[in-house]
Image (cartoon, rainbow, N blue to C red; front, side):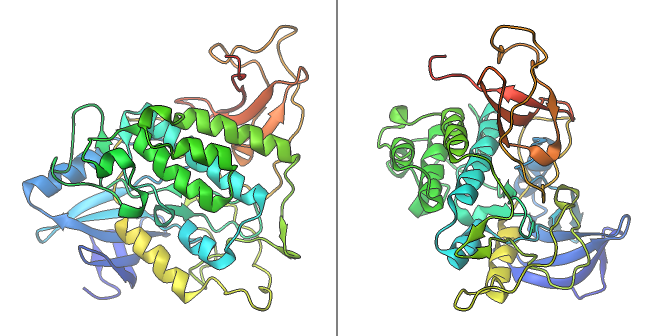
Length: 384
């Protein structure tokens, strides 16, 4: 295998970016439309490997914060997977670079993670390996960060289908929930536990982290409950204004693949301007993090989820997404979260932005299920 070779009559290899457990991961160009992609060896062409690959590839979630594969093929007895090339690195790399994130940034990323897990769990899936190195970031520069939950290689379909042996404990030891370490099958609560550990690194409120990492699974909130609490925390911070200054400099998520003229994944099309010079003493996100993102791409496999005709959803916003008041269409009475949308539409650029109705109800800009529309969705109150 060498640069310039074309696989499946379509993917022209550009350069290797990492070596994964199965083999080399390549940066490639889709010759049909010129987009950059990541092409990785996903396993052999034996029946078990192909069953996993077909299962993972054939049904997906259309969610703006879940990374979905774009193609797969078999070549000379090897199964290959094609994924979007996510250009901003991993959350692990970002945390290593900054050490501590601004509250606005940390809570936004935490909110996006929990929103992704709400969709995953609603689709009857358990991710089973939530950790910073499986959370990829679009290269949004100084704009609003956009996270993608990736690597569904050990995901479990509830309640019965397992793609791993019952004797195999899936996940990363440092992020395994106590019940999984004890040998239980696990469930959505194990994702909440792992996400709680990630939220601790993101600077989420200690009370929420403590609840999410409770010893007993039944004592943990659902992903939806944690997401709603994060929405309240974000609202308490006041309006979001981008760029966010951090120690006197704009916070940024730069493009890890230097020399690329533009964002190549449609979900990352609105990249910000070239990043400013980093301050003296802060490690630049460079070759070390490039290795991290490459390894993350190497680990990323196809998404097992329910079929959705909604597409990949929103576009990363490089413009501010402020907290603002949205005119209600309804003349009177509180909005019914279970009923028709009562508030004006929002845009994909405002996805997960926090707002309020004239009556004071908390709203979140979210995608309407199975459509391409975005609406200001009323959030349940604590009394609901």
